[in-house]
Amino acid sequence: MHRIATTCAALLASLLAASPAGADRKNPLEGQPAVRHRLLLVKQRFEFAPAFESSVNADFQHTFSGGLKLEYHLTDMFSIGAVGFYGKGFNTKLNSRIVDDLPDTTDEGDPTPTRAEWEEHLNEIQVHGAAYLTVTPWYGKLAAFSKFFVNFDFYFSGGVALAKLNNTCCSFDTDPAPGGDLEADPPIFPDDDPNDDQAINDGTRVGAYLGGGIHLFLSNWMALDLTVRSYLFSDNPSGLDFNADRAVTDDDNRFLNHLFMGVGLSFFLPASIERTP
Image 1 (cartoon, rainbow, N blue to C red):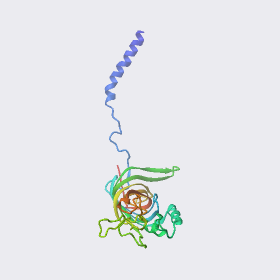
Image 2 (image 1 turned 60 degrees about the vertical axis):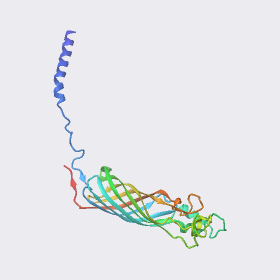
Image 3 (image 1 turned 135 degrees about the vertical axis):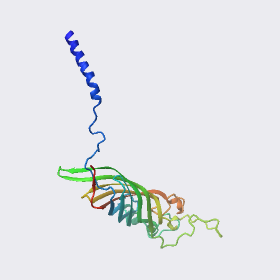
């Protein structure tokens, strides 16, 4: 027992003696960068990207558009930019079915629009774009079969959206005062037929912009740019009576999310890049 007690006392004394030395030890990685010799693929570079995008949630008119993305990367994380697109509208499957079922003429009092009234009230997004700020918080490298390696980064954007809407209304006689105007002289009484009201879903719209995407770098100066963009602004895609008050007015507009998916080919200037220590 005396020998065991002596051994334990010696071990305890050695541990106490070693404690101050252990407390002085430091992590050799403290203060070191997370990644050494990292390629700064966007820092202080200008990005120029011909691009294409298509709407994915349109009710009646899909928009297929081509345009341009311009962006300057202030740092490796923050940048400012703008996009602009010119597009053409095409019928969705839903709209094609609606048009096929509509009559060429209707009887007085029939709430069903004619084919011309329906088609000419629809609008398309002729021009759209945005100015925004971007943050790029994540970057890395993808590997396939341990042989093919691609640098990538994820980014998110927010800013101001701008759109120019267009319709073809109207080849038919329109109601001069939708909903009536009892203060006119003589008073104009409502005709309770919204199908002959002038379409008010064209012109310029300003709203909010949200976006996100990924760069897949094909080289140090070129990347595939895959994006999802949301343009939020006031709109009435059908151009007809949405709130069922028997007249087409500003009350029929609502704040909508116009969602697009796109692809572009980004070119970065200058062609040379920096590398971290």
